[in-house]
Structure formats: structure tokens, C-alpha cells
Length: 150
Image 1 (cartoon, helix red, strand yellow):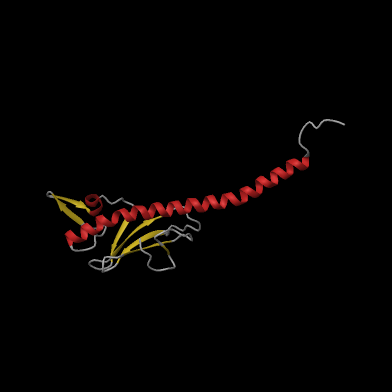
Image 2: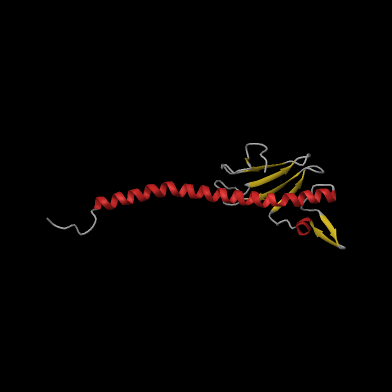
């Protein structure tokens, strides 16, 4: 009987098939994980801005907008500069105390440039969150839904 010197073609094909099957499962899961991480990071950025916005509403009596300016020590500054709001966060006033913060999330599946995570303040001071991704993200509703507390 001859001693086997290596692997047969069948054994190699079986191993390649197993690796292919594992890859077919792992890659979509990893992409989903990356998308969820992007949306979660955007939610965290907006959530950190809530206290700044609330303080501004208490001081100025209105929800701030990107175009607003504030006088600090005789110097006129934009809302972003004065409150430390990142440039990619957009502020929109709906009424005196209602408005929304939004941030674009790039690279999501089907991204057409309009994918935004939105944190909205109602007239009673409650906040709700919506996101565009077809993912379950704690504390934030999918865009089709309405209202989830953030």
C-alpha cells in the first residue's frame, strides 16, 4: 500500500466549498454590522447635542437654526461656533420651541445622499428619533415609523 503524499482533489474542493459557504454568510452580516455602527454613531452625535439645544432654548427662548448668530463678549458668532455643534449637524426650526437636528449618514445600502438620522423636539420638550436604515437600532425608529424615544 502506498502512503498518501497530500490531499486529493475532492478534499480540496470540499474545503473550498465550506470556505465559500461561510464567506457567503459572513460578508452580509459584516456589512449589516457596519451600517448599524454608522447609524448608531450618528444617533450618539445628535443625542449629545440635545442638552446644548435645550440650554439654548432656555437662554434664547427659541429653537436655534444654523443661520442664527449669537453675541458673545461683543463678538458675533454662528450657532455652530457658539454651541460647539459640528458642521455636519443641521438645525431646523419648526416653531419657537420645536425643531429638528439631522445628520447625513453616508454609505448605507441604496444611499442616494438623502439618508439622514433625525432627532426631533416637540413642543413639550420630548425628543423622537428616526433613521433611514432597515436595521433595528435601540432608541430610534426606522424612517417609516414615527416617534421612538432617543
